[in-house]
Length: 339
Length: 77
Image (cartoon, each protein chain N blue to C red):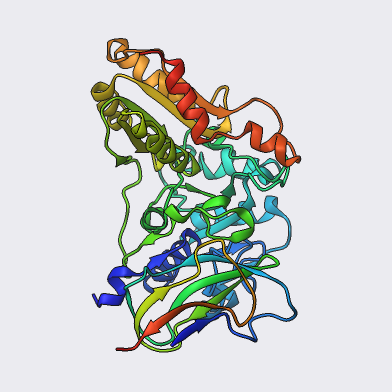
């Protein structure tokens, strides 16, 4: 590796495109389809350059009919292809969810394993830039709840490339949920910590494996995607007060790395879960239940969750910012635990 | 040699935002390497290294930039 490559950084958007391109070069079954993913390169930049290299037969713009192209991707996968299909905003799942959860997720099971369904469904999540309640949701829990699909969501470009490569090579449907605020697109906010060194060569990040992104001894902050960055900022604030916070990046929701959660909580005895998805019936409850079912004795204090309240996401910037998780809310959650 | 937001990167006097540096100060870059991204009106543009050498960053992330602005330099030494 040259010196230049060793220090090269990528945005998550570029990392996703690089992973897809590298797999397309070695596997002609891989193709991409979705809205505005060819000439435009995706509204979130994650297919930039692919149409130039591979042409519009393998990088296919679709009509605005998620129902049709999600079904087409499922069928193509069952017929031996390895489609990467983009649902531009995860909020749009409503019009194509039959194809996703009744077909894509279940056809391996219904066919007794005769058919594999190696689809990668990549979809944008998250708000924070006043795009209101139909373009700002995360819906992590909705996808993770339904059996038959793996679900991943990276917090940085290194994991984004490795998870995308792993997702394309996986014989199961993988839902790749990327947070708009981490894409390196200025109008969606900039998170510098998501832009990290990324090796040029192809590699995989194992699906189902969490990562300790900051070690600590007093409290475990569990999150994914943007929640990891809120957690890291909270850990900085807590450190100024002499509190040592460990931050765990889940990276995958399905399979969930429950051992990593238990290992960390066994060490710290305190648990805060951060999630930009809705609070009730979701990721935060599942993480806390994982610990509670295993051994309540691990906990020195009641676990806390910092999640999106159970309301539609407001258009108004002050109202949306009021609702979103942030580092201050995590620190307040720590204080609420008592000593 | 200065790294500038190219004069022909977009039309008009709109301000852009520096959304990414793809190398740190001190990194060795080769001529033509994409070193930064600048966005305006929801369009993202690439800024490439005008020559090979050691990168020095002078404009931070989220800085507002106009066409022709100097955002860094390359020491060819």
